Length: 241
Length: 258
Image 1 (cartoon, rainbow over the protein chains, first blue to last red):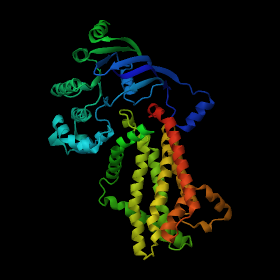
Image 2: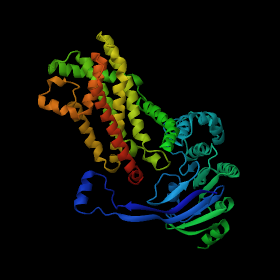
Image 3: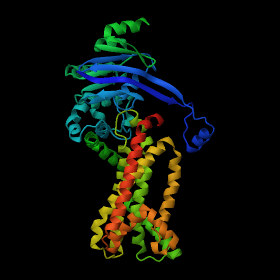
Image 4: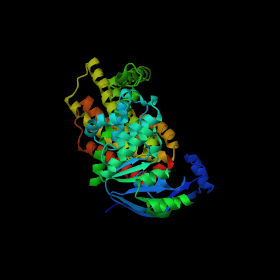
C-alpha cells in the first residue's frame, strides 16, 4: 500500500533579483514594466510513490531540490503544479526544535514545541519524563535555552519529534549534529520506529548511512529524477559520478 | 469542512501556549507585571480627562467613565489588529520549518488583545467604585459587544496580516490610519457634538456602533435593540468573511515572501 503519492509535482520560484519590498517600489517597477521575475525550477515533474513501511533515501548534490521535496511532502510548501497525497501523520525532522523560544526554559520549550507539532497537552505531560531522559539533560531542564549548545538543542528537538510513533518520519541531515554517542542513540530510535512499521524518508550526504538504513533510494539532479531504485543500484551509480 | 475543524482542534494547544507566551514576554522584567494592564488605562484616563474636560471643556456626563469604556473597546480593536498585522511575517522562522495552519498567528494575536482587554476592564470597575457610579444591571451584557469586536478584529487582522507579507508599507500606513479612526469615533467627545454632516458619515464606521453598544450596556442601562444587533453582527461577519477569503487566497504564497 502506498503511503505517499507524488504526482507530476513541479515547484517554481520567482527569483526576483531584488526583493520588491514596498508599495512605492512596486508601483515604480510596475510603471516601468520592470516587474520581471526570473523563473527558477526547483523541482521538475517529479512522480514518486513510497510504499508503507519503506525506508526511502534521497541523495543528490546541494541545490538538487531534496529539501524542497521534503518541505512539499510535509505540507510546508505547496507545489506550483501537481498533487501530493499523504496518508497518515508526519513527524518532520527537517529542522529540529522549530519554534523554540530561546528565552524560555527547556521545560517550557518542550511543551511549546509539542503544541507546535500538534501534540495534545495530556500526551506531552505523559511523555515529559521520557523526553527528558532521552535527551539526558535533566540538570539543565530549568535553564533558559539560550545557554544551550546547538547539540543540546538538537537532542531535545529529536526527543520531542519522535515521542509518538508517527506513520511517516522525515529526517533531513539532522544526524550530523550532536556527538557520536547521541547519533547512535538517534539511529537506534529510528530503527525502533522502522521496526514498528513507520515509513522513513532520509536525506543525507553520508552515503554509508544511506546504505546502512535505506531500502530504496532516489537520486535527484537539478530538480529532476535521475534514478530511482534499490539502494545498491542507485548508490553505486551515484558514487561512480 | 470537517478536516479543517479537526486541524483547528489539534492546534488549539498551540493557540493557548502562544497566548501565554505573549503575556509572559510582555511583562517580563517589569515589577508590576500584569498590573500595568489596569494602571495604563487609568493613567491615560487621567491625562485625557484633564485635557479634554478641563482644557477643551467637553460636556459629557461622567466623562472619565465615558472615555474609559470607549477607549478600552477601541484599544482592543487597535491593539489586536496591529499585532495581527505583523504576526505572519513575525512567525517566519516557524512557518518555514513546520506545517502549522497559518491563520493561527493573526488569530492568536487578536485573542491575546482580548485577554488584555479583559484585564483593562478591571480599570473600568475601579472607576465605577471610585466615582460611586450607579452601575446598571445590563452591564452583564458587556460580553456581546466584546465578541462582536473580537470577530470584527479577526477579520481585519487576517486581511492586514496577509497583505503586510507582500507590502510592509501597510504597517506604517495602518498605524496612522488607526489613530485617525480613533479620532473619528466618538470616544473623547459625544456623538451629539458632531456637525450633522459628519453624523451622517458615522453610519459607515463599524467602531461607532461597537462603542455605542458597549456604552449602552455598561453605562446607560439600555438593552440594544434588534437594529443595532443586526448592524454589529453584519459588520463583524462581513469582516470575518472577507478576512478568511483574502487569507485563504494568499496563504500559499506567504512562504515565498517571508
